[in-house]
View 1 (cartoon, rainbow, N blue to C red):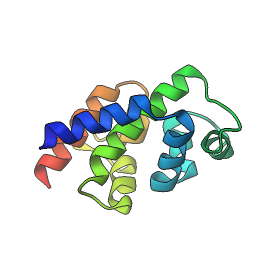
View 2: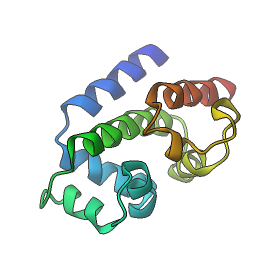
View 3: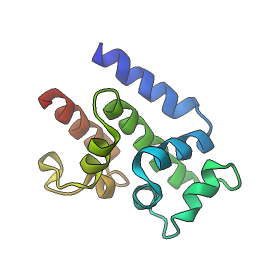
View 4: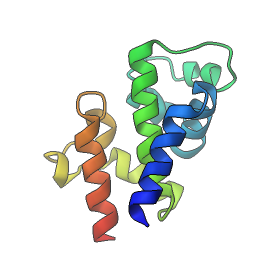
Length: 121
């Protein structure tokens, strides 16, 4: 079951338009946290992407899609508040760094940390 959920989250992350990805992240994580994950200084850019008014740089789009996949995986069993806390909290699987800060450099490690969190929940 978990593998099927993970495949579904991956497929959605790749297939959805970036505006839908940005909108979902904005709803679950908020503009500011999504901006941290995307590594952009203007949090309002998230709203513009969500509305389809602008498109992010390809590296930024990759970060957003990775965050979306992990968020989709987590919200299947956790509340939005728990998912936000997970992205911002010190994570022992990531050397006590916040997933929101690690995702740009090592999304696979953040995905593994999310799997560990769900397995221990």
